[in-house]
Length: 166
Image (cartoon, rainbow, N blue to C red; front, side, top):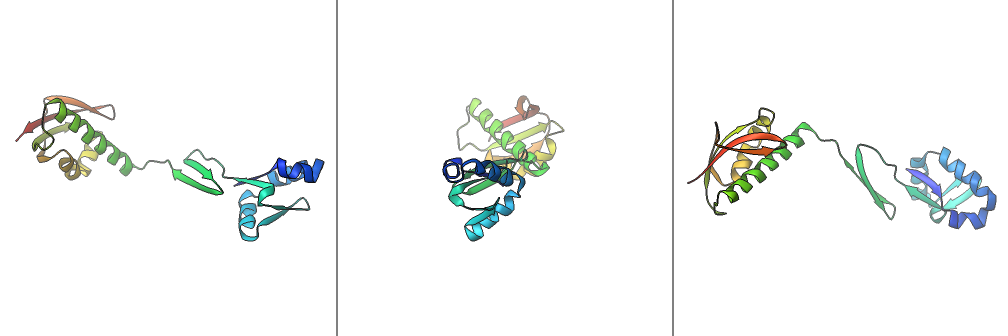
């Protein structure tokens, strides 16, 4: 957390001393100041008692997090992707590609199919980890590994597939 002066509120009240308060706030531990404001409703900096209207509390940005804040609340999302999340994302992309191919081939939405697939080696762990889910999402009655007659692209990698309506 970073705590900065609200110059509109403090300027008229403190005059030139507002710069001293600004420097003291910059040197202080923003997280501790934020906790004090929450607990007691005020902080003391450079010999001045400052309330919540006298300062702005901001959440610091971090490269590994997406951050948003509003009305004193902040939400941070961890942007680091684990291997498990990457595999799940690849499986979702494969489902999208297979459903697009179903559409191109003129299959009805409810048509059951047999899928034969030969994924790029980099995608194979994702396919194997999520095979049951992928099969359910594309209405595959069977899902097997082998050469395909059509190439689709998943995450920039080739996947050979054959879809057969049953």
